[in-house]
Length: 180
Image (cartoon, rainbow, N blue to C red; front, top):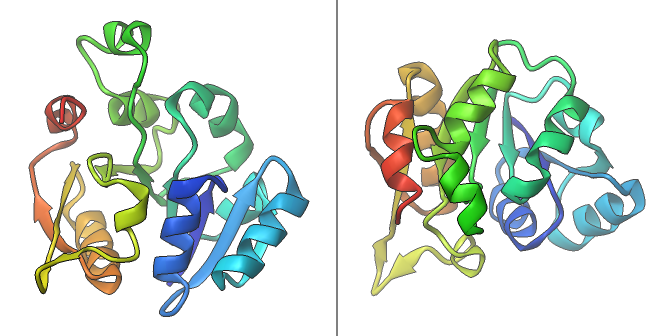
């Protein structure tokens, strides 16, 4: 499966490192040299711009901070029918207040109306992306979204990473996930 990782921070590196052994992973960054260096370091296929990392991807994983999402999303190109996984969290009180009747994933779905947006991994720390077992038991990853076929694909990615995926309901359930 072709997976575009948007962002080169700790979460982006963790996802790329965890998925690269079984999938074609393209790491995207505002700085293409940083993307290339990160891809080389974590074993991804290559580094690219945000647009190129998302192009033709089966799944795009958004690992940029919520505060950077508004600037980042327009750079991703046409994501019609693409599965987009939001792992962001609104850290500041101002961001959480602005989302009182919504969630990051719901807002992303509004900005990418033709994409298949899911929420997951927002409750998982980056260091656990590559070692998700606890005492030999796969840690659970909570995934929400309205598209069951997209969930099934993301569940497969979660299992490939060593997680136990748990369906926690529709995209609206992300409001509760962001409180974790």
